[in-house]
Length: 166
Image 1 (cartoon, rainbow, N blue to C red):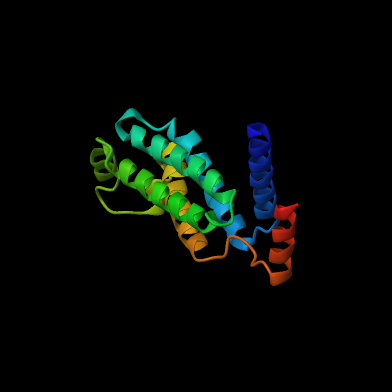
Image 2 (image 1 turned 90 degrees about the horizontal axis):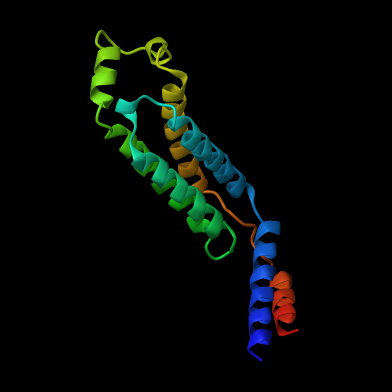
């Protein structure tokens, strides 16, 4: 009897995940772009110099990816997925800004003024990380205001209720 309940529960959860994946809206794809940038920042941040490295960047970025994927699987929690990703991207950016040597590196680099040319003189991993921090935060912030799933109609809701009864 208990196995039947477990099988029914897993079937219900599987149907919910399937419906959620099939009804994704354009907001989810915008959030996926931020997710890809977050993944890129995890990879590139491993190659920054020691004085700019902060482990909190990798931890918060990885948590953002994991929680985004988990929350995106269900329609009720899909709107929270880009919010979590945005918060984790902000925490990663703040961890990067709180690295021990960041003041030394940037004050030396921009001693006589700021320019994008000087920013690109940094090693590739550092400027790619900086741009991925900022872009992933901005894109996930935009995704918060976009619909993650298409709205279900009354007919689809009644079909789901019939499917649950069977």
